[in-house]
Image (cartoon, rainbow, N blue to C red; front, side):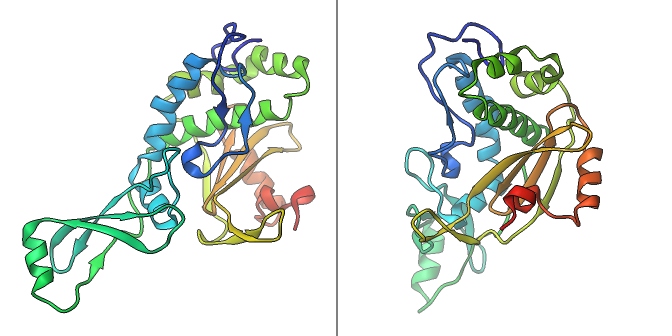
Length: 261
């Protein structure tokens, strides 16, 4: 067995690779041990996933939706106790209610002098850089392709050796290109819920698929809290995706064709 990214022998690796990070609620979409070697796994966690997850926009989103890290902690955010006192705010996992607030002495004195207080918490933050996002999408997209071929060793070997995938492989692993464009838009509200296998309504945190266009381009489509990203796994352009949207009434591939309904 060889690593999907560095192509080195990976039979002795021990770590599983999560296609979508655990800190975005993923416990199901996991590649078998060895498809991504321990070295690449650790690198992605540190240099690709961490900058994405710790960006202000994703941190604020995870805070409001109370999505914990793999250690069970919801990220804290800085707010303001009106009129001007900074506060740090925490939530418990899967709890929409603000649970903890820490403020400095001046803010505490101000709060104690009034019967009520008002805390303003940011609704959004600065998004991660395009380079951070495209590397994150490239890594997850190539792994999503691999997840479809887990039962077919010859298919996995093709992914490892296919030269047309070397560009996205190297960009994800080494950040070789300063710019790899992707398409992003909102397709539904961040608070959307959907029935699970048991019929219980649960929040849609993330969902993804691979889109093959008529021109045989492969796009990785990922929605996080309703924000849809599309990245061309074959090269740094999105014209094919824009053409697909134009021909399909701007529908999301996540809800079109075999995914309709």
